Image 1 (tube, protein in one colour):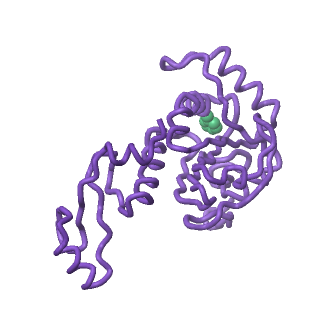
Image 2 (cartoon, protein in one colour):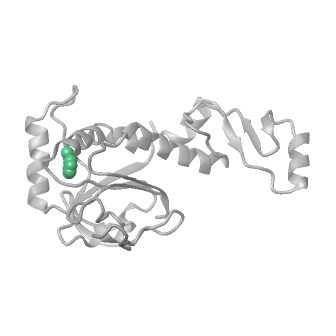
Image 3 (cartoon, helix red, strand yellow):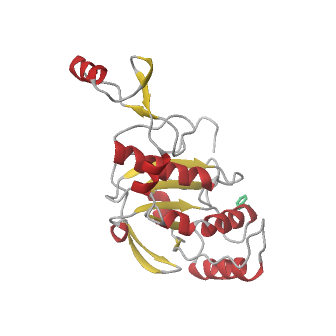
Length: 237
Ligand code: BEZ
């Protein structure tokens, strides 16, 4: 590709319905996102089976599956490899790989085969500047109504931080549940951001209310939200 050439890839957008598809996976056929209605779901791609960064990622994500399930979030993986490659790779992970204290790791969430790249192209996972033949490390966090809420892309060489993906799911649910926003590096128990008052009336009401807030300026106010309040609404177990 010439340097000044731009390749147009289709990308889902935050706030829009997740593009739908049907696929064959290691756990049977799925209809996406319909089969996941009522749950949060992380759809993520990896470049290739039997590669080291991807193996470390799958072992980490599979080890956290229950933690995600406890916040009503399911996981779905994808690469442009075929089903038998997926099955053989996941079996190798379970039977042979011991890494950072993780061993006997069973990947129970579905891994989509996408040899035609149909799904990968729909989700902008093929980014030719990085690779024409492998998906980049894409992450789509989709809410129970099938709306794309967060999109993150990583290049082939950079393994993802799965604690950050968990933090993002909890922060999105907290924002929905408590009508707040979450500041930089927020974790449950930290102060949350009160949306800026849209009118003088709301601002006046807020000034007069008993709710305790800390205001750094008129457009930047926070309030306390206890870890217990967050966890009691978000975490199922
Ligand atoms: C990996 O997972 O290790 C990997 C996959 C594709 C390209 C580079 C690294």
